[in-house]
Amino acid sequence: MEESIFEERINLAKLNEAVFAITGEIKKVIVGQDEMIRLIIAAVLTDGHVLIEGAPGVAKTLTAKLVAKSMAVDFSRIQFTPDLMPSDVLGTSIFNPKESQFEFKRGPVFSNVVLIDEINRAPAKTQAALFEVMEEKQVTIDGNSYAMQPPFMIVATQNPIEYEGTYRLPEAQLDRFLFKINVPYPTEEQETKILANFHQLGNSDVFSNVQPVLSAEDVQVVRALSKQVLVDEKLLQFIAKLVTSTRSHKSLFLGASPRASLALMNASKSIAAISGRDFVIPDDIVFAAPHVLRHRLILSPEKEMEGVTTDDVIQQIIHSLEIPR
Image (cartoon, rainbow, N blue to C red):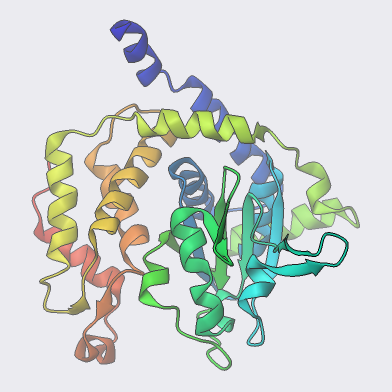
């Protein structure tokens, strides 16, 4: 019995096949943005939500749609606007005169992959509506709880440049995102390939070339494999030291919570699994740390005025620690 458990634990063949298949489908359309694709797939394996920040036109929304298209799961898109109400996202109870009772009409959040475009455009009331569903994967309306069908993942986008008509996301909501991915512009060479790709596609739909390669059941299987990846005791101590160091750092007004430690450990497992390993190495943690921590930290006002970023502070902390070998 023990031997079979051990074999199953280290056999990542199915997971690696799934990662290769999803990556292949996405890369039929997307050129470059390898880090973003890798992190979104890691989030799928970790069962986490993703916040993508980048200038308009860098394929944030397109990538999220392609990830959903490469899996045989339900997909919905919600465009956040200043007049959006919680019921527009979660759903509402409607009176049925035939039955003489209220019936719950599910909102667009009841899906598997939910794309929220420009998440920072909705007011606090609507943002707060996401707290329960992001953490507990259920919605409570009129005293009744409605569970989400797995897999459930929110991919949210926001524009870092345009501040007019936007609202700062509450810290409690930011803490519920596994990753915040900053998407840069492509290089000149990559942009040339993008033009060539879309020129060849002509008037055809970019999504018509992408096929679903993973079912909802397959996603659950590969997630279970990812959770079994081994983490050495020294690496657990390294994660704890890295996260707790943010709470006493002189450049930070607010450090990361224990939820961040768990997120960093689980994300490191997924990164290791994507790399074909059944064990975590320090490089996995160092790679994941900025994406897991950048949105959970608040700079002190002085450092913010100096132009220091949370990424700068994270790198300072990593360099100040002894990395286990």
